[in-house]
Amino acid sequence: MLIRPFAEPDTDVVVALWERCGLVRPWNDPRADIARKLTEQPELFLVGEVVEMGEAGDAPASIAATAMAGFDGHRGWVHYLAVDPLRQRQGLGRAIMAEVERKLVERGCPKLNLQVRSDNLKVLGFYRGLGYGEDQVLSLGKRLILDEG
Image (tube, rainbow, N blue to C red; front, side, top):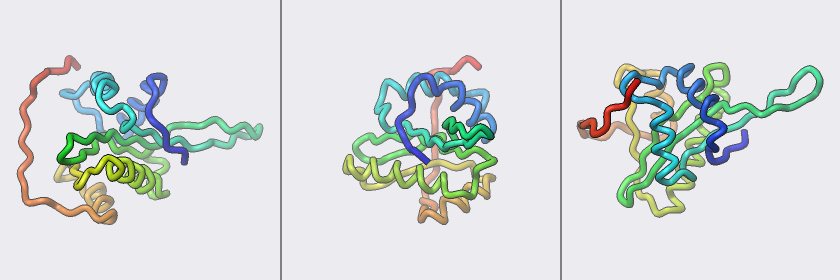
């Protein structure tokens, strides 16, 4: 898998991937999230491309993984980690998370945080396998801008 920064022409493919992975919610417009991310540390919005070998021997690349990361000077965060359901359990999620961690360490980030819905046991197991543990904190949030869905 080739891991590279997101580019605006990737938008439709990335949103479709997030939809297939069940990451899109009515209160979060994914296109607005992408537009906002491109104004802050866009180099930390990563996509993973894999090569698809066709019958004719051609090799078009397709986006099979994403991770949207950031660093505020105190903690790093990752959102929208997605791996195409047809390509899960092939090491793509592990690879893109390793690249996120590498890029954050380069910036001096001491700790990476992420949020997982408590009923998403499959993903919780994935992160635990990468060495992530549950922090004894309660996540609070306040909507400052309402996305029109």
